[in-house]
Image (tube, rainbow, N blue to C red; front, side):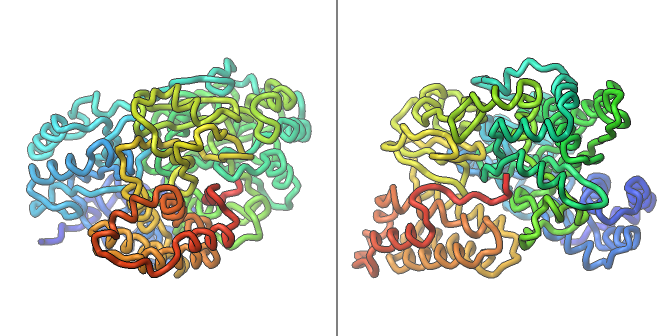
Length: 602
């Protein structure tokens, strides 16, 4: 296949204009690369050379960043780049069959560029549309609710080279699907109300209220928000920063998508509260690349808030300056970890840092930085307006407030459900409309915990089942081995490659799961996976490697027949004691069935 000529040569003014717009600032490399690719289609060698010269970095360093992220393309991708979301819930809805049908109609193989250079079709990790799948990204614009009729029409539109702006508008509609509201989603606040209340308290008073509220980070780890803000405020530095972690890449999670779509004012106000509390003048929202379609709407909200004196200089006519800008990721799950996110904000590959030091003292640009989840920042507005005592009265003693759950899978009404902490899994299932017997519920995505039908009275709370928000339901017709295999491939794909235990271990586990799937495996292979589990738990650089075998551990422990029936045909005697291996894994990890989250102190 011939290599397409570099588009940079066709319009030499594009790259210099983008560089000038970003002040030739190397720390804005991610945004420079994204805007360049959107203009030129892909990042050709000449383009990378021009960008490297423009930001003053070695070309190898610029290419290293571009090569790290799956949404940056160093080879032609075609006029149409179609990526099918490959989360387990999309598979349950038939995404594989639909993708194969599209490829057949376009006469191409998955993962390959068509011979005419027009189109490429491939898979990507969860796109945050689990409540309205199967979903695809077409040139990184979300298309929901795919079916065979849409596949046929899409193939025709691509063959006729119809511009995306002329495709059916309903294809690009992303609905909120809010099914149950509580204190946060039914907040009743007007823009500026929480901010005015916070300014009446003063920075220290606000921090005290957040501490009294017991507000804990909603990213999964549950770190105290008030303590984080206090540590950051007290840290010495030339500048302080607020970072909103909107990189919700955990499969099955889409709550932040809804907050940013319909509650953006609340999120931006929460960022402003954090800036006021810690003494920051600048906030950065790190938004996952899959949510690129939100940019215009979010920028419009920011512009309105500036006009209303809720952002910018002298906010509410007080001696407080603070503004927010939006940065995009480019398809790297590991950037959900706060130090990897900061590396990405600085224009580098998103590899987690060694800690300590922690971001509260040495974060963005090596300055004190408070990194908070979207939901955490929105909830801070309730605390500022109603007080810590009021907020602490919601939920349980150890888990104050409410929690947003992204419910998907085998339910009648997938979508967003908000409950006070302490709600049972059974109550959520009842509200979501379970139509068949329940086999399992995956709480907090692949890195979380899988519970069986005998555990449905357990509660969503930090003291029982902590969660970043994902809530995937599997009825009795589902093969839990296939669920675990999908998660194993997810971790193998998303490993940043920094440390050998995770880089190699995740690949080995995925390959062994594939071997079992084809009935070529043996108990020896299960033993090898447990060895990988123990190795990655003790030696991985970050939480991704530590949690990568959680799905294997849980499904072997609770759904053993799904594995055993793949071994019976081989007539092997077990080469090891499975019960002993499970017991050893529990003792080593200190974990019975509670997941080890990708730790971002949130």
